[in-house]
Length: 261
Image (cartoon, rainbow, N blue to C red; front, side):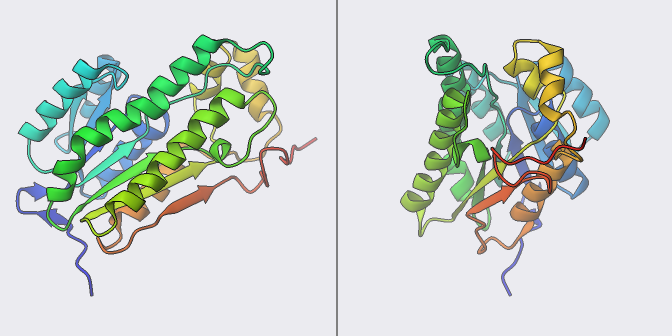
């Protein structure tokens, strides 16, 4: 039976998590730490990272990092690698900006989404690949994309486009690295209710953000996605879960969502 490599020669397995200051990233840090991982939390907001590290304790270290900035990402990677092996990278940094139709949307919104969701994932994944492949038993790259990358919807041209690109990035990396000691896992969540996602999408309009989930029974939470990630990375190193598509029971597709009356 394949070994799961619960610990490396340097101690607990280390997982780098981007976007760890909130939402799915924060939940993933908490879940992995509870399962014996050493987590390295990355995000731009140091106060949020410090609070997370205080909550988790010795199993968490953090590095302030803006994955859209080359120098910031390189400095973060240098710090991470100085601390030991890296067994997993979980790319959670991302988000949606705007929901305007293509006819009237802001080009700058699309550029910002592409920068953080796609180029941010590319930037840090590329820099950590050698370390991941050198980890005892091999390493794992997790890309948290979205069902928006599988099926488009009105007003989603920008976000659906970048999440499609992010899913293709993960799939292509899997093709290119086959035979190498590396797993590549794409996790595509449907409706996940977090405090910031829709609020950021609608530029701080709380009413519009709340309307997204109004009447939807039990949308997914960050903890639900974190549990999927934790399950996938905890499988034996020889087992690659190429793709996980996860939606709340009330959501059949982007266009078919059940609302309670």
